[in-house]
Structures are given as C-alpha cells and as structure tokens.
Length: 261
Length: 261
Image: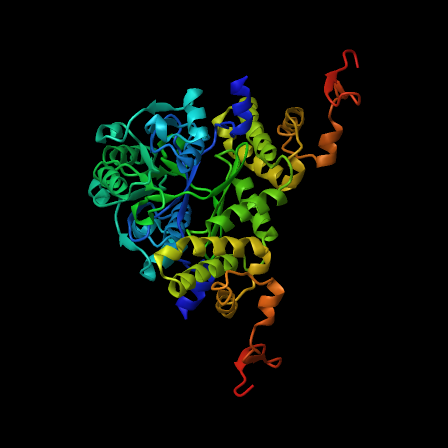
C-alpha cells in the first residue's frame, strides 16, 4: 500500500527516450568528416552554437553549402581524406561519409580517446542523435522522435513554430535583460532572495505572450518597481512608454527618426 | 556580389545557441552526486532514457522522491559522500550538491577522465545544460532558453504541450510500426527505394494530426496499398476498419469484450 501511494506521488519512469541536452560547444573544436549534404547540416548546427569547426574532406566532395562556409572562412578546411591525427584536440566528432568501414574505424578511434561522436545513419555508432530544431534568438526547441520518424520530427517542429507567438525569443531576451539590469541596480548579494522573489513575481504577473513585444525601455520602466517590491500590470507598464521618437513612413514602408517630435 | 547571392542561398549562421542533442544513455552508467530536489529531477531524466543510475549521497540528505527511487530499486545507492573511485566506469556525471569546492573538485576529475559532466547551477562547469522536456511516447520536445529564462522554458513547454494534438506520440508510433511491418512484407534490399518512396507518399498524403488516432489495424490495412504503390485517403482507410469487437459499458465506464458481436 505504501508503494501505491508513493507511485501516485512521484512521476512513473517512462523508458525508451533519450536524454535531451543543450551541449555547450562554444569555442570547442568539432571535427566534421565529410563535406556532403548531411555534413552541411551538421556544420550549421555547430556554427550556430559557436563551435570551432574543422571539415576534413577533399574539395572535390563538397556540397555547395560546405564550399560556401569554407570560402567565407566560417570553418577550417583540411583538403584530404581523414587521418587519425585529425582527432588531436577534438572535443566532438561528426562523421558523414559514404564509407561504412572508414566510419567504423573513426568511431572506434573516438571511443578509445573518449571523444563524443555521431556516425550519420549508423545508430549503434552514435553517442547522440540530432533532432529538428526551431531557433528564435535564445529560444531553441528541439523535436526528437527517437529515430522513429525523422520526417515527422520536421513536420512537428514547423507546427510548433507556427503556434508560437511572434517574437517568442524576445520574451526570453527581455527577461534575460531584466535580470542583468537588476543585478546592476541591486548588486548586493544579501538582496539575492528579494531579487529572485521579485523576478518570480514578474514572471507570474505577465502572460509570456504579452512579454514578446516588450522593449528595452519597458525593462527600464519595470525596474523602477523593484525597490518598492511591486509589479505593474502590463497596461500600466505600456502606458509608461515615452512618445515614440520615430514615425512610420507610409511612402516607402521604412522607419525614419522624426527629429524634434 | 557572388558572396551576396550565396548569403541568400544558404542559412546565415546565428551564433549564441547550444548544440541540442538526444544523448543515448541506455544501459550506460550515470553517476548522480547528491540526493536533493535537483538530483531527483536529473535521476528521472536519466531513468526515462534507460540509463543505469548510481546515486552517491548519505541517506540523511535524501529528498522523498530520491528515497522512493532507491526503495524501489530504480537506482543503485551508495550511502556516503563522493569518493574519486565513484567515477570508475561512469559514462556521465551529474552533480547537485550544496558544496561549491567539492563540486569543482569533481568537475576537474571528470575533465581529467574525459567524462561528460554537469555541475548544477555552475554554468562554466557544465559540458551541457538541461532544458524543459515534454514527453509523449517516442516524441520528445525540449525547450531551452540557453540559461536566460528557466522558468519561461517550463511555461513555453507547457504552452507547446497544450497546442499539440492529443496522442501526438501515437502518430510517431504508428509511422514506426508501419515502417517495421513494411520491412517484413518487403524485405528485399532492392525494394528499398520503392519502400522509401511509398513511406514518403504516406507521410505526404496524411495530415499528421489525422495520424494521431490511427491504430495497429489501420497500419495493417494501409500496408495493403504498398504492392500497387498507392496510398488511400484517410477516409478510405478508416472505412476499412472492422466492426469493433468491444463495446463501451456505460454502467461502469470500462471497456468489455462483447463475445459474438
């Protein structure tokens, strides 16, 4: 009986999933072996996470997007087939070549050296899989079907992107900005509980969909409520906005500053 | 000019993100140091991905959920403070203790041994962060705000879960089942292009929201269209269902088989 009660109290384990992680690869060396379409996708994923990417592939095997990244100097290029010394200093290895034997050799070398690796299309030779990722500034949403429907993953990712309010990323940016400003205004570590409490009040007071359109000015205004430990309504906050210093030009659809307004 | 054209052709790099990964931890050893609330969340994440979890923590420091997992034998328990030998054989280390000095020591040991690690609340001592994950069978959706708004991540995750059609996980399960059955019906490797082509036709023909309610029987019926390389409409498919062998019992709300119907 005690067990039954406990089961209700705590979530049941639901196996069969992956451990979804936001890997921190900024400034780390990622080795991409191969230069085809799959490699192009992997490279973009890594660059979007600020990795230092090295691509090992003869130029003759380049997909146009990979050639474009190399031309622009976005990645380091090694113009030949893979050699074991390429693994020196690598923090992660992504293999996307049409050579199962060579792929397996690279996988084994990575495991000897304890380097996390992904051999495209060979699930048993993968420490991790990729999914379909929606990105909006600091917001990242990843859809994984655990290998059961990669096409569906992309469809669901697009479905989610459509449902999200516009500027969803901005709501997160705004909260991040507010937290940063707050630490400057109230830097005293002893105020930490008050700071945290107030931030929670703010998150609770506003609908996050309303926060998508908040500006830096709004965050400055919101900060004025920290000292008395209050939170305005969204309407009160928006009413505090100064007259806009710009006007919309109906002739060419661009914004122009209206000096003196 | 060539550069400008290329920029339009290929996605621009948008840095500042993480590399979101579906880590494969099934049967691997995850060491969790600590037994508080944060540890409880980490443990559940790992169990849901079929990891072998070892928790190092004096029983006196247990949160009720961690105690519950230990009691049920869902995790291995080491009833003392961390010792370096705990890292032997560990594939991943998650630290959630209120001792910054001890945490840093563990982090350094992990880096010497090249074990991926996460020290809770210490971003510079993290190979990866966790996000807020929605789970529905094989479907996993992870929301990351890249550390800018953990509370918002949970709010956005709940928002997404509400927008998803009911049984979204079932659509993926159905496609996975169909692919498995198809490989049995048409095992010839030479038929692989036809198989792949037909699976794509199926994905394109049905709205994925319609697929959420498909059953195993529907998949069997759908498979009959593979040989002539056709795909029925959803209505044609549903019309093929046999009369249900069960009936709903209005008296006690349970399903009962109606023998002979």
